[in-house]
Amino acid sequence: MSFIPYGRQDINQNDIDAVIQVLQSDWLTQGPTIEQFEKKVAEYCGAKYAVAVNSATSALHISCMAAGLGQEDILWTSPNTFVASANCGRYCGADVDFVDIDLRTYNMSVDKLEQKLIHAKNEGRLPKVVIPVHFSGQSCEMDKISMLAKEYSFAVIEDASHAIGGSYRNKKVGSCTFSDMTVFSFHPVKVVTTAEGGMVLTNNTMLYEKLIEFRSHGITRNPGLMTEEMHGPWYYQQISLGYNYRMTDIQAALGCSQLERLDEFVTRRQAIAGKYNRALQCLPLVLPWQHPDTYSAYHLYVICLEEEQLQKSHKQVFEELRQAGIGVNLHYIPVHTQPYYAQFGFQWGDFPVSEYYYSTAISIPMYAAMTEGQQDVVIKTITEILK
Image (cartoon, rainbow, N blue to C red):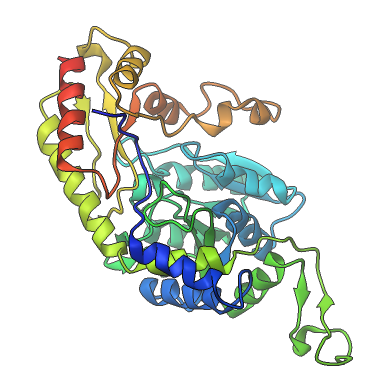
């Protein structure tokens, strides 16, 4: 059988037709389809506003800007994430620090967050922004994080790049019930795709206006935000230093079409996870644990090796799976160990739970278009390599 990737997009004829329709229309860039996509996502999640951009990295950046993050401020996030969750703070000139993860969920540990906040308050070094990352599609414990945010006065930006279609306490991830803003990714390996793209959701009108401003050069056409009367219908003002982070109508059309199948995608991912749980439970593995308050979108399915029960190393198992045509991956190398962050004094040993997780974790194939036959091959191969 051919190579089975760890993740891939699921594009059908409706998706193709939606894109063609836009290509044959009057709008290719900032047209009406973007607003339609934003409205659909906001309504699905139960949020007031949504702002589509060209990547989740851009979404994180303008979210930090909207929260007022700047020089001499501090952002905290999880070490177990893609570097963008931390880099967005550096883009704003802020210092970045990390909160270690919970060994069951692989999400930011609320207990460690609280302990770090107590210590930071005593030192006068509290964060202005905290970015909890919903790793693999499972929400962090957002009610507790929200309470800490109120107590210690920091903004919460949910990095839900993995988690569209998931829920927390029967609220859709993206509702912003427990946060100021939520960020989604629409990269091809995510739950739904726009080829590349991202989105910020919020219920705060002032944040929404800032997000709109920052996504397009800091320019406004809103007379209420201008410093003088409009010269005519052509007039606009640049009122801040923004960026060109705009999504295209072509991407938004694909997003609208994909969104029609979001629940179907997540249901399929849940079924794949259930089959893995049953088939792999007797192997020397730690399988993904699900918090009872969450419903995961299952962007990833991560197995962790119990190496003390194996005659093979983590690297050896990973390489054997790749050689057998199973497209495994590793999410993630702890961000604080990257050379860029080492220059700020971070080193191996700073966040031991994230580092231990990294030394045992392997992401195995998980995507909605995965067939039963492909999953059977993955299960058979893992079993043969580990037994």
